[in-house]
Figure (tube, helix red, strand yellow):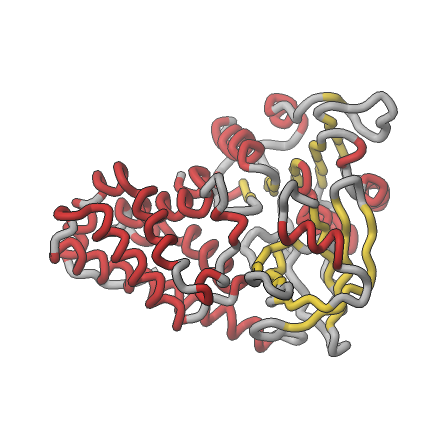
Length: 399
């Protein structure tokens, strides 16, 4: 990551860190208020991240603060930039959208800081914003070009047909998607997601990311979606996306991926619907002869919420993988689990090769905080801890 900022700009931006610590969330909330005055721009964002929890404003506030703190050493932000660029590509964010965000952010800084937002401060932040925007746009162009050039690749939104659907549990349904034009699809990297543009008559278009839950095959994709309470998009998919339904889909994106040739033991650790990218990774490992040890560990509420249990056991038989399933609140009739309660961190440390394994972790925010930080404290190197979170990663990302 290379960019050049004037020394005075760096000094001025760093001087705003205390103000961002005190008012960062207020600034980002105000920014989105300004941004969403334009319905077309509002439609670019995943609105499920802007509800009561305000997870996206919190995540952005953390990112802005991290940017200001690291303005002299932007290389430290490399992983965060990659994650943001991948999300932008999934949502089909283009260079022409950046001026809207910049105007809203600078306006919000002026609104919240008032007299403290001097001309010097505003000029510095405008320069800093466009320096970061240039970095993101350059990376995003590379990703767009790569997707377009790949066999089966495309740009923008492509029409897919729901070819089949399968009830996996009381709350999770899988959807098999085939391209409407019957042409090949770009093989995804196991762990990546698809972004969907869901358009319903009379409603604001919704954009949602769903992990691909099958190994790449060049012909189709499968997503496995949890019906979220009050979920507009997930509810519509469960209720209305019957075979034959047309869905508009962006190319696979995401940096949470299984290596092409894992050289270390692999631990797949998931909670709830976080199993979806893990199943894609597990299926892929089952198709690649390898001496790599595989550990699949999953936590679910109970048997009624546990998806793909039989399929995972079949994969374990084919690969010799170690499978351990925990039910937080098992019912008397539940079978197929190994222990009651949540997955204990101590158990994970004692029963997986923490000195050499790569850990792939996906689940709710609290699940990630427990295991990402817990494994780090247990001595697992950061480059061996890989995680995906279905939404803005809030304080986990900021850290």
